[in-house]
Image (cartoon, rainbow, N blue to C red; front, side, top):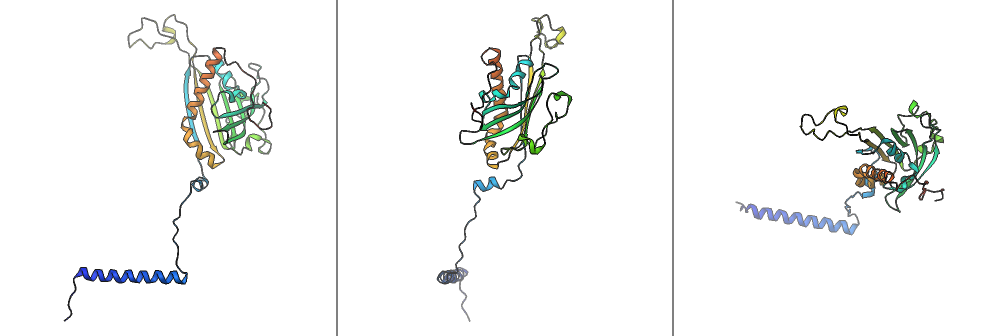
Length: 280
């Protein structure tokens, strides 16, 4: 009759035989040169970026109510050639084409502009934007494959038709696959209530019933930005700064408007910055 070994001893024996078999196999493979090397596969940061072919547009927006008339704010926003003096990330700006004089005010407005946008001196890109101006109301700039809803409307009759894609520098951008920046101004008249209107039910009265105080000019400023970079590396770099871009831009314009109102920031000659082919 065979003796029955304890289960633990049997397990140890099986384990030892398996270890010896494995060691023998490894030695044989090493000697014969048939050993396979297992290399862990890792995706680099750059590979992850470049593999992201389908990038969706990023959308940003911001709104402010400023205590000044729309005409002053519009003058600042439509002064595209001065953007490099106060707009964040704008290192150079110059208007390359103007519209015909408008029937409303006889002024010409930017129709095409070249901008240099950069995160620092080492990472920057130059591109051209098509600009549409509705005097006193809207300034919209598009670049890349983006089309403007204003194209062909009576509000921008002073602007020439956008050139065909092969003749349009704003559609040949190597930096922006899609860009739409739209400023919209709306009058926001405000009249202070009478000093004796302290009752909560009568405090907010109609502007015509709120006393003899003079109305104050206020303007609601709304900024919409829709963009995607043609270069996926720039798209990745922009994600960290993007959430604050719209707020930073509207704050910069707010400061510029205040400077103009105080007489310290009147329209200055265009500054090309570091834009290629243009002297400063």
